[in-house]
Length: 226
Image (cartoon, rainbow, N blue to C red; front, side, top):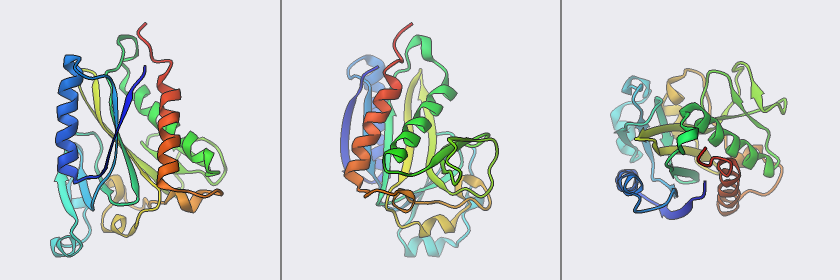
């Protein structure tokens, strides 16, 4: 399953969301191939289908002071934060007929991030019952339960007739302060971490982006029509 990459740079969240919807429509009609949108966003909290503003821990005035938008969206999951220094990837992918398992696709994206982090010497994992990618002090790539590990990558997807949109947000070198203004993913006690703080090698947004694209390609390559 091949795809093209569309780099749109630092883009307002609502503008990027509108672009996603446009690309989904085009993908469904066959006007475009599978497309991976790569971006960063100005400060914004997004709340998914199962989320609530009750997980925002600061007054509205604080959000206005720091120019943090709050936007409800149709992806899965609860509340998360996007901001500069965070690599955001939106796969506009039509899942092949033999591979229409939404959870498997989410696991595929998680594995892509775990492999990307490993390229920079960072130990990360997936955790049973939770989405996204987390630090792994033990070096194991899968943990049966959460025991205080910090979150490197948030994930939330939506689908329209088997075309995916929304996606993943990988903290590379972001200001993590706004995460303290909410319950991350609606979970009390969960904390974020940047890749640069876990890595043993030099990290740059450009290089991380390059590696992530290659790792996603490796993961989706076997996903052919069967």
